[in-house]
Image (cartoon, rainbow, N blue to C red):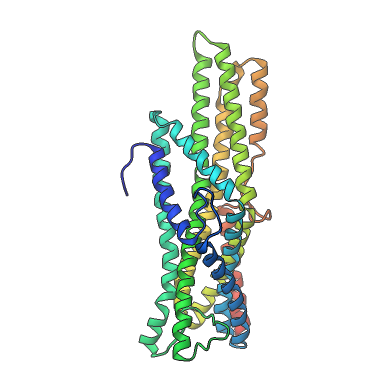
Length: 385
């Protein structure tokens, strides 16, 4: 990774990586006057083909329950991919606006030694996590890619990478097998790249709440210094309080925007991850399904990432409450004290990221989901036995 001294430079560098992933899938919203293009069309076509042919394959493989379960895994991936593609496209102007606001935030404090150092460290961590997230999806894709080679080497058996047949193409014939495998490889590459782009964007937006909180806390510290000064300038103090109240309102709006844009995406992710992990574990246990190992790992870390981001949101809101309460607000005039009381009240009713509005997105929910996956797995075992 290249070395930078300014947080906005690291932000730009990280954005280049995200934009490369998004551009490959045709959903780079940072392009000036973005329009639906052929790469976007390919991404949409892959999604539609996946849904249609998975449904066809589910009926085709009946009553082979294990093959049907392999198709169900595909449904789990599609369930979380469709909302990301749809909401990413319809909210493209919002994302472009937020990209600009975040860069302005990092650029504004480029000469502030402490804030720049903290923001730079934050962006370095986000970049590392973005790369790790991409590696997780690549690992999941490789699980499918090496499956045919393993089966041919171990059992001298010709199998498809994905248990998905294309309509009107006989995958049992040599030509049909080649065509189906080529289409599946394209679908795997597009899926891994698209999901990586979507999740790294979510990581960038949610994790950068920490940047807003860092700036907000620093402004409160400056206010404390003003209040403790021997010669207080009341007008400067009033301006500082207004600035802090404005920043707090921006944080509240930012959190609300995150939940509003990602509430359906998080719901789709949870349903898709539960489906993928449960059925993959079942197939690994019953048939030693090779791609299942990679899918379980990829889905586990993907779900963990989202739940960690939700926990970060909660922790940062608690830090805001503590920072406001720890300020020497009692030294303020009556009108400014009321502003702080209002901020404290709003902070105690902060917005959380949720899974479709049904449950908060945090580590407690992650543990509950993992317990539910185990229960579903045991239910499947009991059903087969």
